[in-house]
Structures are given as structure tokens and as C-alpha cells.
Image (tube, rainbow, N blue to C red; front, side):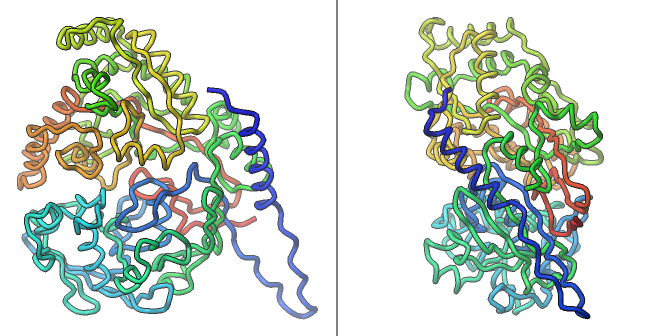
Length: 554
């Protein structure tokens, strides 16, 4: 896909403005004789790849909003990089012997306007998440709570029946449907973060759309939000643990081109950056490359009805989808296209996730798809699909392949396009759109095929498996399978740990045989940072990066 000259000139202008905005600052005025020099505010600078579509706690769904939310807001707990649950807004809690009742005791904490954070703010937030009128894609994160699903799906209409109640200003009680070992860690997720009813209702639809339309109870406040350009965060003076926060100001530029971001880093205008694939080897040899698994899995996601009936006949056929699975050279893709040490995804559940007693992938090994392409298998499944549909190869319409508009997304899409044409004779038409628009098209189910990704919200295979149930908030594939949904519902209520794990494995295999997704790779990221940056956490669960307790010296 060729860029127009006008677009190139605009990008050059944006880059020059970005470099100017992030460039060296004028030195501070010298202190008067006999006065101690004022300490320079500590500044952290990095980029994200797209505008965050929403910062509303109960509406946000994307990785950028989750990362920002981790720094602007705080839930009942925080989860450290070692997976340990630490106190957040709750300074302590008790869990009943049957594992069904959680009682949280809130600390003295304030919103950014100086008013106290109360148990009512959590009760209101979670009931808002579950309110059908909110139409939250993440409402299912509240289904662990007693009557949460029933209220969200309209089976009951009285929100007082939901198992969450502020016993007083500082005490919150949550009752679950069934014991859920990871529920405590889940309260660190943005959807369960508090909001204050009076402020939200006063803002109406404008809530969280601008920096001054948000209340903050986390380590930072959003001082400036220039849409599609960048965001500026400043340390929150009202945060209860502000003395542990070392970084005073954070400048986040929105840059879609990885090479542009790299140029900014090398010019001294960023403090850490993702390494473009053609620079990884260079930095690795110099001992300056860092690698980590960010928890994201990328997969083909099919709209089983397509944008029209002609395409929908094919995308709705399980054998046609499996032809894609065998046509992709996963290992070649991660080696030649990504070049960052990512792993070929031969299964769906992320191998890093916990099982009953060990990692789930160790307890239940699986290689459903091969690492390398198998053109013979791809043709076998394509022929099966065509026979079932009474079609011939020359009758296959072009499949629209939706992806982001970044440089890396274009390179990725073209590589996949070539593999499908070479190994299966399937033609893809690439459609590149901005990140926000891609999400909108997916939610409207206005696509044929999209290269999508998912990162875990908590350390359990369910964080991947429950995406595809009937009526799931993120199931925008038109795939509705009662057998699969029943398997997942059983897993969510099974009291026996081993039986639950067995059924989750059964669900994973069923999904790969019949479902609307084909896994491609588990992402590993390469990055580098300036000397003097410490305490920055790169996570495979939750916020990435996490700079709450980072520090920097220049």
C-alpha cells in the first residue's frame, strides 16, 4: 500500500513538532548564593502506538487504556510483577472460609479533588459495570459476583440483589457465586476500579473524554491530553502512597511508526522504546536489548457471517478456517517478520498461565497446529470446505483482511497475504485503518477477517477461554456455540480444581476445532532504555509498562 505525498509531508511535520516538543529544555535559573539548588523534577518519556479510545473505567477495553488506568486510578489491590497481591485502596481484607465473601477495609484515601474515596464508589462502579445500559464489553468481569450476570442479562432488574454492598464508608462486602481463587487479583483490573457517582452523573456522556472530565485516585493525574498527539501525566499530590512515587511527570507521545519512535530515542527525546525488528540484533550484540513476554497472543479472528453472505459462507465454515491454520508458517513469520524472539502459537492458551499445580501448558501439552506451514493439510481442509459448500476454488471471493495502519501492521499483513496465496490459494485484500477505527469495525462486526490480539487480565486460562461464549462482551465474531458456552460455564462453577482444569483443556481443543480463531504467535518484545532508568516493570499480565514505582536519574 502506497502512502500519498501529502501524507508523507504531514508525517514529517508531526515528527518535527514531536521532536521540538520533546527536545532539550532550557536550563533552570541558578540558585541564589547560599541557597540549595532546587531538585529537577523527574521526567519519564515514551511513546504509545495509538490514541486510547476511552479512559472510562467501566468502558475501557484496550491495552493503552488499561496501562493508563493503572496509573490514573487504583483498585482495591495492586498486583506486583511477581504476581503478589498487595494493598491498594483496601489496606486489609478478610475472606470467608467458604471463599464466597470478601470484606475489604478501605484506607484513608482521596480523589484528586480532595474528597474521600469510599466503599460507595466501588459499589456504584461495579453496579455501573453490570448495568445493561452501560453496555460494557467487560461486564463479564463482574459475573463472578453473586447475581452479577443475572442483572447484566436482564434476568433480575433490582441492582440491590447484586452481591456487593458498602457496609459503611470504609467497608465493602462482595459475595461471589462460587469460590474463585483469582478474584482478589482481578480487583486490580480497570473494570472494577472505583468511580464517584456525583461526578460521573454531572459529566454525563462527556465523562473521561478529556483530562478535566476525570477524577483520579491513583498515582498520577492526566494533566494534558492532546488527542492523536500525546498525553502528559503528573504526580497526584492526593495519592495515599505519593512518597513512594519517584517520577514527577510523564510525557507520552502517540507515534504509529516504530522507526520514528526509534529516531526520537536516539535523539535523546525518549527514555525507553520498543526496538524495530531490524535493530534488535544490533542492540542485542551491544548488550542493550531487553526481552520480555508481554502476555499477548495474536490470532486470526473470523466474522463467521462475513460482511456479506458470499464471504460468510466461507468464514462460517470450520474447515475453511482450519485451512488458514495450516497455511501459515508461524515460525517463519516470527523469525523473518517479527524478529523479536516471539513464539509460534501452536495452541490457544498462553503457555505462561497457571494450571492446577503447575503451568497449564505443562499439565496439558498440546500442539494443535504445526510451527511451519503444511500446504498439503491446508489444501485438504480447503477442499473439504469447498465440497461442503458446493463451490470451486475459482469461486472463492477475496477476503477482506482488517488490520491497523502502523508500519509494522502493514509488513505483517503483506507477509500473511503472501502465505495464504502461496500455501492455500486464498486471496486477501488488506484494509488498514487506525487502531480506534479497527476496534469500532470489530465491535460492529463489519469485517471478514482481522488480525487481533489479547493479553491476560489475570493468571488463569479462563482469561482467554471465556472470550468466545454466547453473548460474551468481546465475542464480536457472530460465533454462537452452546456446547462451548456450556463447557465454560461448567468451568466457572466447578468446585473441583482438577475437574475444572480438565474441562478447560477440553474447551481449548473444542475451540480450535470449531471456533472462530486461529492462533499465530505469542508475542515477545524487544526494547531498550536509557542508563539510570530503574524499577520499570514490563508485565505479561495487566499494565505494560508499569512505572508507578520507577525511578530515573540523568
